[in-house]
Each structure stands twice: as C-alpha cells, then as structure tokens.
Length: 276
Image (cartoon, rainbow, N blue to C red):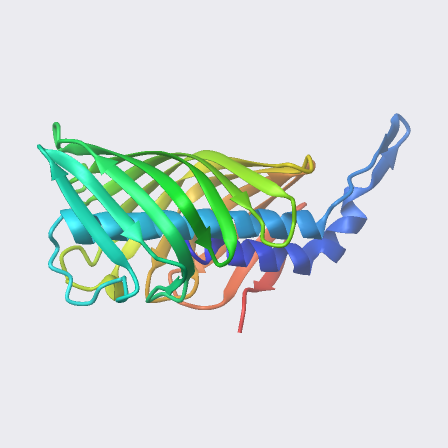
C-alpha cells in the first residue's frame, strides 16, 4: 500500500477548492458548517502511507526469512541486518536498519522492527510485531499488533490478516496520528518467483485514524485494491473515505499502471492526476 496514501494526499489537495463550496450548507432549519482542512487530510494520507509501507516491510521480512522462498532479488539491501532466532516451532526475526537504510523500493528507514512468531497450527501462524526506535522517512512509528498468516488460504495463496494499533509522530510537529484497523492482504501473483518485483497483492479492510489535534478519518475498501509492487500506483479497486462530514469514493482504474484515479463526490466525477 505504499502509494495508496500518496494518491489520497494528492487528490485531497486538488479537490479541496471544489469541496469547499459544497461543504458549507444552510437551510431554513439552520446552518451546517464544515471546516475542511487540506492540511489534516494530507496528514491522514501521510499516516496511511507510513503504516501501509511499514506493513509491507514486515511482510517481506517475514517471507524472505521464514517461508524459504529462495529470493534471488531481495527487498532488503546490505544496510539491513536480519537476525533470525529459532525457538522450538517458532522464533523471532529482527529487522535492524541501523541509523539509516534506503530499501530497494526507495523507503528510508531506521531502528528496528521485531517479529515474534509461533508454531504453524492448522495452516496459520500468529506473528506479533513491535517497533524499537523505528522511523519511516523521518517519522516516528510506535505501537504494534498481531498478524495471522495463512500459509495457504481458500484460493491457495498466502495471506495476512493484520490487526493494528499504530501511532505515527510526524517529523517537525507535535501532532500524532493513531490508526486502528483490520487489513487483509492476499498475495495473488509472484508467489515463489524469487523476486519481489513481480508481486501482486489484493487488499481489503477498514481503518480509523485519530489525530492529537482532534481530526479523524475513516476508510473502507469497497472493491479490493490491487497493488503491483513494480508499479508506483494502485491499479484498481475503490476506497470509501469519510472525514469531517464529507464522504466520497476513490476509483483507481481498470488494472492499467497509470497515474489517474476518479474521485466521486456529491454525484460528480473528478479526474485526479496522481503524479507525474
């Protein structure tokens, strides 16, 4: 989900002017005022990208370390130290990025991610994760949660169900954002290929993000989001977003890798250019 929130951040800024005229409404029974904040919407998008990319880092770390996929092309460069400590049928994995490490997808991270996993029971394994002085692109990340890893789901694919309570501390501010939610990522293409570059994931779920300044936002996947890791953008799927009494739907397209999405608000469609 690296690029999901990049898209949301961009479309939030672009459509702010369009939304403002629709957000302040009045009738004979009274007036309803909505103070739409592009700054808060952008921070919400940033929180999502930090959390989503961190979850992707954890998943790749676990897969390369424990599921013995024999990766010829690793997600991790030499500045990442991966320590695996078996403990019976389980064990621990520590992803240590030192003081700064640029991963092969361009993310800059530091500190450690700790994964503790138990035995495989009925085809599933529980993984607990936590952070130790961990930063993503300069932003602090704390908290943790649980991953239930299906070695093979009903479709014959690996999948991860993540329960999360993760707090992001934004660099250069005193504002924090706590995201609580449930996210399911099914690995639908590239399993066992030996490289992360051809991996494709189908993502569903919902999450709420609450900020220390009182702003909040919720998102729910209404049509599975498809992510190709060799593309900078989500290529299809829809996300319903609610924030400050505003609701809308973002459609990521028909499967092609492009920088266009369509935001539908108040019955009107707006073409959103997601990046160059």
